Length: 552
Image (cartoon, rainbow, N blue to C red):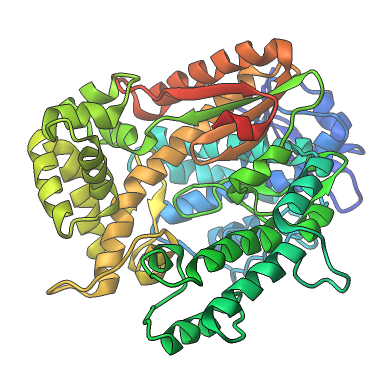
């Protein structure tokens, strides 16, 4: 009996289903069934489903209480394969893949929509995107052949499976929502911002701070307008290039303190104020749209709600249900551990084999116990900070860990030359046109002119240097989530939050220790699956709390 099926929603509201053999080809006739949930429920729970898009199908299944263990997302696989083939940016829909396969005109992808508060739908509008199952299977079979033509087929297949698993996790997180106490949130806003005035203007505390700023300058200044603030400093004989916090802190003027406090509170008011609470929190849950693999590095994004940038003070509103707990787990020093695993540098792997402070271990061996210097050196190698003292630190790091530094150096050269750069599993950095100054700026990588290189060239190199580490970390995190999801299948626990190196599980208090152990085991399994046989460990710091803010 097969454990793989393909399905495609039909125009009449039913669903077409066909069994698949191990070769990915149909192992029986296509059957039309009237109900999607029943079609899946009637097959073994351990089966793998091949479908066009998880976002199209899985939220509908979850709404009826149906959960699947594994899937293959054809459109997500198309994105990964196009990238590997150096065709980043080409239409990635199943319809576009079919058109390329048949040599016909390739349709553009439907536009990504903006998130709607409280909505539980896919990132792409489903209208007009349905595809007959026979056509979908034609695309799927060709994708299996394309996997075989990649540099490392086994790794690429693992990446595709991991990304599809991530899509399932994201859909389940969207369904579950992050526990959120609206009453606590409102009290926080009142304490921080004061009362709201009629008419929707700034709350009392912001208005008071704006008056303090104006009084310090001796004339009316709008602190929410950077140009107004810069002009005010200029009138006071002080030249500032921006209103960024780090620059204002170096200025000696009585307006600085209230201005910095205004900026802090203004961000909270705009990004997580009363309007945000009204729009995004429903029935005790905050439900943004998590989207797996939303960036070229594989990091997740959210479509609306700003879930990945919750200020620490607002985290006091993230409270477990009565009798439940939040298990908050942070990966410790993930990037340098990933660098050790992908570079196979013996010295760095030896350091990363321990659960203790990696930067302290590096400092003891290379920087005479200066931990801060060691951290700057390691992160400088990953992010390309090689000017000034960074160059000297990098030289010391290169002597001690030559294979690790050579690995990111080669990635940087490849990026500068416009060559394709890949993560350990095969996720591919876009070629030169997509990794210049704009991409580097988006990744937070500063640019600078260097002799013989343009800023864009150097930006591509720095982006590629970081990509092989950050992207491989994202690949590992996907397998971590997949393993953790499977470990929790028989528990009441639910994954409710994930960002880069942090995961939150909401569970009954009696399951908390079991979940914490499951996270540790999932980390070890993900490391073995992703990087093979290495001594590198990926420890988590885990806190069992009732309130998210108490985890750190």
